[in-house]
Amino acid sequence: MAFHKSEDYDSATTDALTEFYRAAIGRLGEDVSREGLVKTPERAAKAMQFLTQGYEQDAEQILKSAMFREEYSEMVIVKDIELYSLCEHHLLPFFGKAHVAYIPNGYIVGLSKIPRVIDVFARRLQVQERLTDQILNCIHETLNPLGVAIVIEARHMCMMMRGVQKQNSVTTTSAFTGEFQRAETRAEFLNLVSASLH
Image 1 (spheres, rainbow, N blue to C red):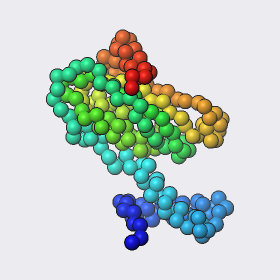
Image 2 (cartoon, rainbow, N blue to C red):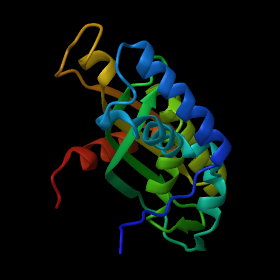
Image 3 (cartoon, rainbow, N blue to C red):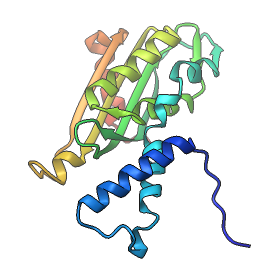
């Protein structure tokens, strides 16, 4: 039996993007009928839909689906969460890690939901600064915790492959609400994120 991969993409969007990529590849001087490129326009169309699927997802509902009443009121940290996104200026990837903490205020959330929220916002055309704020605001507004903290460290292919071509540059962004605006709490979070505890 031949291999069949099951994928769910909007056919009209796939068709339109396939034609776009076929024209773009031809315009760049390639032969789109060449064996290695025959299926590339359709693959690229589906890849772009996958990489931007966050537009179709609701991060707030993801958090609400796994909120549990709990009296725990100490810091909860999920660190080293891998993220991949597309820079909205050049449509080139940026990738790295996010470190997220919150202090519960009557509710905790299933730990897997925080990485899922990150994916919702990362799988859109983005800039790292906005991505940082969107993740923070979603957690803050949905869970109503005593505070939220986030640090994102990422490498941007638009700086590494083109432009200034600085392969070792890393961009760090951060945002804090509530208790994390206090220097002592923020320092505890940053120390725990940078420590090798595992």
